[in-house]
Length: 307
Image (cartoon, rainbow, N blue to C red; front, side, top):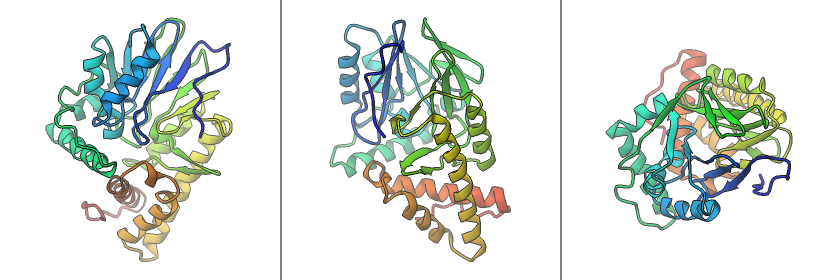
């Protein structure tokens, strides 16, 4: 997956990677009218993110901070960015705002940030999650104005309830959400569902109908391996294939732990282990397995993580 910050001259925008470290990716969308930060990565490296943003912006102002969803590796750097760029309007969904308002959710985000920092041999960041907020709540059908073009908001639940994608019909640019999956290379896509299988399928099909021409994927950057339509087809394929694997293994007598390990064997050791802490991966995998078995078979497993 390549990152390209030098798009062809006919485009009216540029996308620049500004994330501080792998796993905490963030991107600047630079246009003649307005500038937006897409996601904010971890909190413990947010000062470096802010420096990267200033380098790319120069004398321009940061107009928007757009959050694709509320998870710690996408939203935790937001308070630091708000303090560094007080003019920026934070944009996210209603459910993300509700998550940020919960002390228990912020505590969980702080804990995951501390684990990620420890994995890199860095110090935890103290109270940098203080001030986590949403200034403008958006929903399906809303538009974010950039002057020469706009981004239409699409609700894409499946990874989280608050997952959003953004599409510019003028440019064919889609800013994806993790609900639509993540490419792992060589035709392998990782499903993004955590809260619902069918809603994920519905979200992918809704975005397919837009027929995007260019695709920005969280954690991956501008997708350049093949056409966006092919990526979305693969996302549907792997969403169904992993669902079938989970259901079949459970019916064959495999434990929740064994099923999670099978998922880990497919994805974690391929690529994800280099950028995501194992605790977070296993937690998400356990949630995914429980969700699939409950939705597909009506089976309710222990709510505790498998590991």
